[in-house]
Amino acid sequence: MATWHKAVLAAALGLAVVSVGGLAFAQADAIKARKDGFQVFRVSAGAIKKVVDDNSAPSGAVAAAEAIAQQAARQLQHFPAGSDKGDTKAKPEIWTNWAQFEANMKDLEAKATAVATAGKAGDAAALKTAFGAMGGACGTCHKAFRND
Image (cartoon, rainbow, N blue to C red; front, side):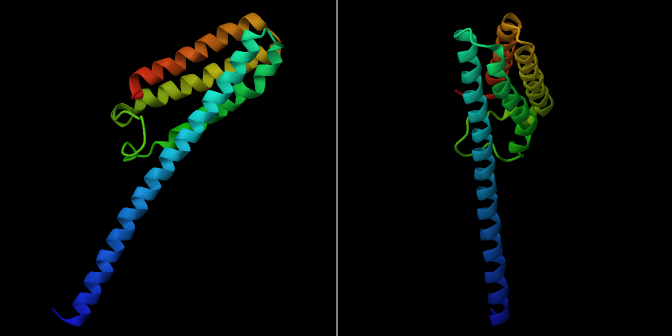
């Protein structure tokens, strides 16, 4: 094999390794980003639960509910095709039934917004009801799209 052929082959193999390595890195970044997003959901839902359980001022739930709604609006971007491998509980059904997954995330956003609205209104009963509905949205998505 001519020297220049070896150089081209070595460059092509190097590019392939970098590309595959970059893909694995990008996939790991997506998984980390979505886990961070789910952490926002978990911590914020815990803060709302505390307001409800302690019969605290409903306005205390507003920031947490808004954080969930905002994260729900961004969360879909952390599920690019191919990011179902690695340290993730994401089921393949996310990508094969993307429309339903997207609808579930939009439902969570709407329900979190309803929690924030109840909190802003100072309505403890509405807050409790809206929080229950938001929790239901979380559970619906987990059953369909998360491996436990």
